[in-house]
Amino acid sequence: MGTRPPTLREKRRYLLVVLEPAGTTVDQKDLYFAISDATTQLWGDAMAAVITPAVVAREGQFFIIRCRRGTEHELGTALSTITACRENRIALRMVAASGTIESLRERIRAGKRPRPDLPVSGECIFDKKTFQLC
Image: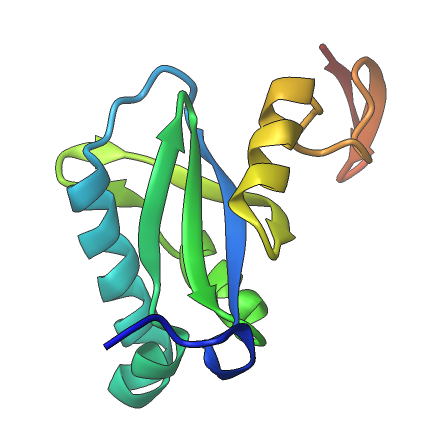
């Protein structure tokens, strides 16, 4: 049996996720299980089967995670609920979504900041207290 033509293939999206705190090492398989558990706990078995999350690649502190097209927001929400992977305390932040892995790898190589809307330095006022940003 040959490969399916592009019109019959399942449409997928790829999420670029940064692992925090920097320097934390996590096994790709352990991260897959943490993502799978978080997706199932938040959305249930039926929706987790629709999302079909999978860890595709690792590039330093970045991971590329695959899901079905149209479920990127649900997977991003599930990723934000992950607080630990095995014994490591972690947080996963979604940086970008794309239809190709290569465009996400180009984004990593370009060295774009994960959150370009945040200032690099300055002051921030929170709860009537002023904080210095570094």
